[in-house]
Length: 252
Image (cartoon, rainbow, N blue to C red; front, side, top):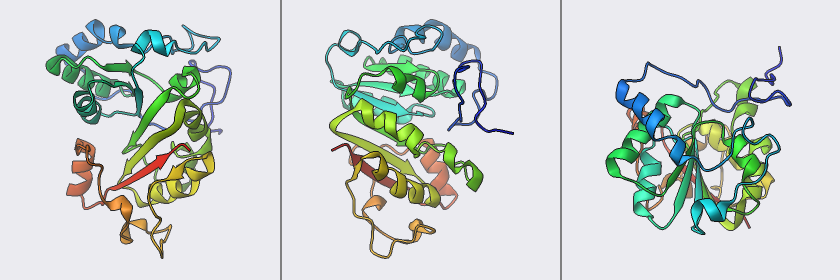
């Protein structure tokens, strides 16, 4: 059986998901209200195929009023996205997340904290990358992505050319791309594949780096960024004895 099925959302092409499930436990009434009342107003524009089948690029100037725009691919429960929005009020941040429970969690945080500088696409980041104008983003985040631990599924990871190439196109020259993961083999694949897409690492690969066991080699990727907030995913990893890594790349 092929792992690149044609789906109802993407009948024109094969589609190998780099994320897992779309739904979790039943939403409570408040979360349902967030989705009904708040989500539409936070849209970055016409992203979905059914509303933009010809993939017309988004009008970034009209939607974001000329402000710098950042992207978070898979925001989980939204802790990092809201933290960055509060820390950098002059920046607009687009978050993509197909897991609807995570979207509802983010919307609750946005409402409680009255964050104004965010946009939310409750779906696949690739749909957004399709319609982002070239060189329209100033920063991107890939934080604790689905690890797809089985070797036959490694090509589903975001750090493959299928996903990295459109991200590279959407980033401005000089833009930063941050990756955080606690999975040693994800580090290995990022170190191998991200530079192939044209990104330049902002860290030195340690001497003696063993692609099979990067967690055992200290290096620049041990320290989090100065503006980092530890998410619930990272806290879970730490409790379970896994070591986080923080990789910074830049589009030249």
